[in-house]
Amino acid sequence: SAVISQKPSRDICQRGTSLTIQCQVDSQVTMMFWYRQQPGQSLTLIATANQGSEATYESGFVIDKFPISRPNLTFSTLTVSNMSPEDSSIYLCSVDRGQGSYNEQFFGPGTRLTVL
Amino acid sequence: EDQVTQSPEALRLQEGESSSLNCSYTVSGLRGLFWYRQDPGKGPEFLFTLYSAGEEKEKERLKATLTKKESFLHITAPKPEDSATYLCAVQAGGNKLVFGAGTILRVKS
Image (cartoon, rainbow over all chains, first blue to last red):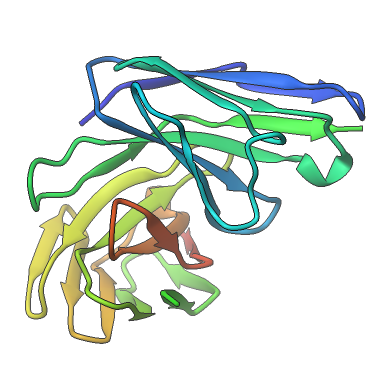
């Protein structure tokens, strides 16, 4: 398994501001992922973050709105920029601990963001 | 486009009343089908990955099965602590997971 922590666990922010969410893993991983879970909905992948390369964003998500850093193999940040109430969601990071064709993805506890 | 549909949306059971949750999927080249449990206010907890039709995995009161078009999560003699949202996800190319909307399970004592 994997022990994943996120900071902050929750925040209430004003419209137009930005928030940076941190994700820390207990051991080195190649791939880290950022997901969004809007109220009452399931999870949607925002981007994949590999250490040493630019993050890969899914359709509907752009780097200017959700810049991601991946400075090393145990840490990543996601920034939600110029926030609006529509950005109110739970943001989750996850890691892939699989080997070869054996896949396991583990999630952090999430960051609950409310934008006023 | 990869799609995952879970049913029912919500399920209420009495303690000890066994049942099954369904996950139907459409994907090009399935690499894995994942089941997660999510409690309110928490991140998803990994349960199983299934890789090929006919595969089965068990964990305590949960048993997951896989066919070429769907997966079932069987819950045997559930307890109130099994109450949670159960999420199904598929993985095709790359490492991206595509999630279903989930099934909210409530088990009453």
